[in-house]
Image 1: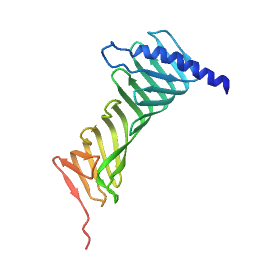
Image 2: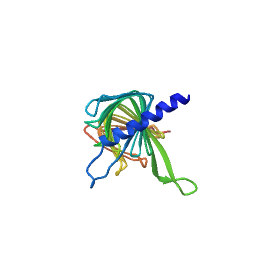
Image 3: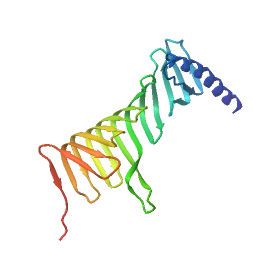
Image 4: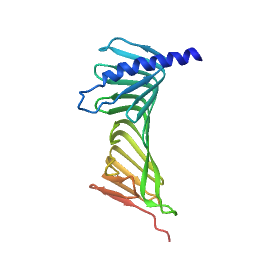
Length: 226
């Protein structure tokens, strides 16, 4: 155990130095360090791919990525992370088979078993007067997310769950500043009382139970009890 810990420590120190230099920018600009720890590393020079394997942990800014394996290119400042990946940043947790990230642009692209969970403060308050918090869960085939703003675009078999609300669409674009998703392509929304909306485009608000829909045709169904 002591030897393994020493290996991890040495790799961490080496990769901090190498990757920190890789993402360095001019002195007048903001600099963010990338810290990587793992059990094994194959380093192929500053312009080649560096392969890290075994309990990989990548930290940059407020983002933390864990996975079994990563290939990092020092020159392009990009990484391909595989084998079951988890990215955590603030109130967002993203899991996927493969994650490709650009450390300089702070953009990550996920493919394969994509699942995103985001805690969102609601406009509605609880009995004590504090804002409620809901967890929005989304699955899709592919997703691109800004690790700086948490805005994202999801594509392919998009499914969204929020409390008793659900929605499906071909595509979803989330804006953190507007607290909403723009859903397009075969949109279907179901509310808490099983009311449904079918349309071409809808705005799904993540901080309250509200939906704005449009399209031709647009269909709304609901139940009426005798």
